[in-house]
Image 1 (tube, rainbow, N blue to C red):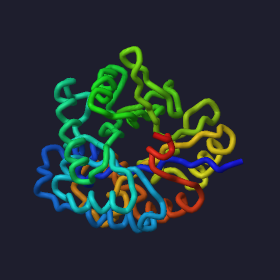
Image 2: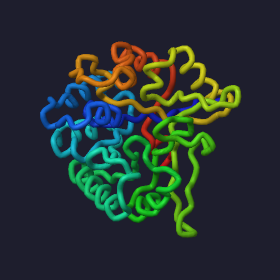
Image 3: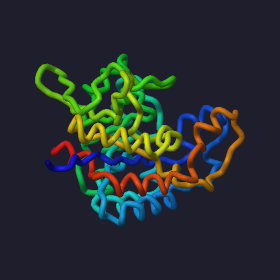
Length: 279
């Protein structure tokens, strides 16, 4: 029986793009904060073995515009480049026309930088909810073939625990379809356990994450979507004043992140989203 190949993804943004950081620091002007994304991406690429393990990098347009050579280096090492929007603005706060302009601009920028087609999208903070289903039509019309903006869990900011847990087609306009690839979960004791990365990966014990992925791969014979941010490998990033609960959610586990990711990549097989979906 062939081993399951999971999808590995990286949301390429600065530490100050994180929604929790922005909310916790209020009106702090991010332009006054130092950029650290290039150093963080260097760590990510080294962790991936300089191309030995391939991943999908969902890149913010704002980051690509400021660091074009970095995006080109990621692509040159064989990784897939996908779209994460322009300025990390929530889809739920945009009109359909604003959303279209946002993704069209970034898609064009990334394709110009890499010379490769961009067919994948992930909404900042998983902000395509049930009331933003119009976004799927826009994505299809703009040439995207898959989306990864759904996390089927209970969360105070996003998520739908009743949604499908594995890749599925979203039918639009009667004949066209977009593939949705949700963030990874394991169904245990009637609850979806978040095993797909982000803050949960930093917070939960490694043994629990490993068990969950093994269960999905071995018993359900399905791939999981895993994601992380470059800033999660940067424990020395600036620590701005913020309420303790925001500080906990943003900074917990940064010191251990790189070691945990190394174990993850050693224990399971990963590739780009495009390769896993076969498109």
